[in-house]
Image (cartoon, rainbow, N blue to C red):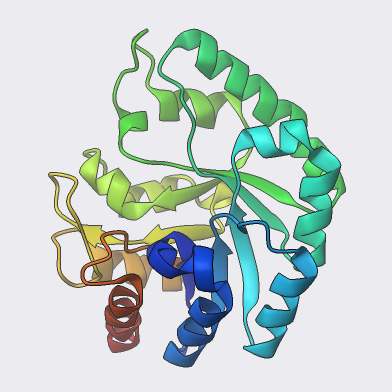
Length: 240
């Protein structure tokens, strides 16, 4: 079986109170990589101990840009302590030109600083980045042309934003090392893998062809995060 990852936001119903239990359950399902969405004050050494205990790898984190601006050394130290070399900004308020320009300046300043520490900096899209902001800018176009950061394509949000995620994967292949594989409908309603209309099977095939990491994200908690996580990895296994 391939090494699949999961974004821990998928099981946010239990991570705050039982992070270890969530990691244990995901490992038992067959996930090998986890992408964190916050650590809830848990020391890095504790997280690393759980990862080692359950045979998991921290493939990345979703970390707000303010974290590495406000505490660069602490953010770097935490990532190193858990063995994680990929920091992904999960989104930002970029609804005006002023905010977008400032954000791009931050990304361009900190990407080389993080790279010196062995950590890559990436950006994760939703669907609104493909539509004009208040000042008429297409946010994603501005980021990809004015930044050199990595891109974590969220294939469902690309689909919901009217884009072809497979074409995007090819277009940005030189900056693409990981994707979110996710399902849902064009009206933005998310679903576990195999239950929506997003082209998940084609995304899977393209990711295998390109040799890039696949990270599951299933956000609806219906009936709960672990149930959705199980549905998703069974879908992935069925594609092999």
